[in-house]
Length: 590
Image: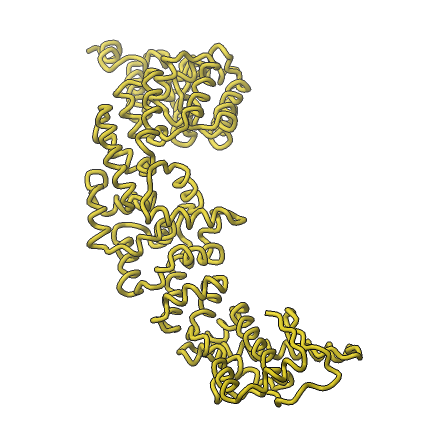
């Protein structure tokens, strides 16, 4: 508040009856506080008006007709710095008085600048009010700040919350009121423990930002209070520069966690927090990933293990059975413990049963992709309807739901874009349905970044537009092979052993899975046996590329040794294309 008091007014105010003045003074500082108040005489005659400036120093200035010198400015800056240091030491003393160690008290005081500034402002306001002599010693100023801090009555909790949690001063003061029964050391221990379990152990392999983003994106059910508070917390992080990537950073998210869930600091470390952490580890959540569960669903820390967590876990007995499986589900989707997700689980089960999806497929889907439980039945219905339109049978639907339940959460327009793209390549709707039943991952792939790249690779190899639909029908998995890490190296190996691009294209046209085979596990050992032991030319494998599909130990070698023992000559197709009865009749005289 700005003060502008004329000299006669200030004299009148300060010359009020002693009892009133003493009460006013005592309301701000104890009588024992060594404050220096001015005499009740009027200020010097050259003083025009007492003006309070909202500058950092905020000292009342007696505006003299003579200008200030540069030396007095330097002295004022030095005095201000001395006062700031004295105030920091005073806050440190307050913390020490309330049980915090000397080293930690100073660290907290240094890192709570807004609290220190508030106390300094309060002391200066009193100095302004009583026209206190500004030339008081540093030790005297420190005592003033110390007494002011005592008068605030927060027992060191506010600077602790500002320093250790990162709360802005208003939030720190608000939350400190609810924590008044706590001592500073007890709160400090609690804050350190929460920070340790949330931000110290960074061994978790699950990218927490990606998990949070995906969970938020696929949520389409009504939410309970716990889930609503969780969403509000995550949205606060998302709105910051850096977004959800800050979630795993103490500097980036701890403040918002405590602002969203201030009751966390009311929980007992021994009775509430540690039992939940131990339980998560017991059910199979890796120690380094416990932080993911807690940050993605903080309300779990408020839950009683026997009354809340175990009964909710029991809902998924059919799905996960053992504790370890439930732990994996919880890590993938911590929201399964919320009442709204549990209610939606029952609705999804009933809906899929009505569509004659086998229970085993449903359980596998929920276990592998529990995020489906955040999707409303109203969102699932259109996708299942579209799958049936393109010819996906009940049997195929079972497989799709069991292996790729996330397809049901696909946006219909994105799904149709893939269908249209495949039609443009020459596939008929019936063929597209069969492709989906065999490799549903294709319909969740990005057209430009994934599908087109595979088509371009096949075109560059020499597979014609005419043969492309056949290649896709016979081996749709080609669309989910990595071009740089899988397809190019396999093609390079085939070129290295003497095949031309044209021959490879011809082989792929006749036998699409060729480029899906591992070099070390399939291509190299079978080629070396063909060239070194069987001593057959490459032309034979060009004519019969299916050779690479047969087991070397169970079929190729046994049949070759039989034929060699009879001193016979036959093509690869004759040797491997017959069933066991036909082969025995032709080459074993059976």
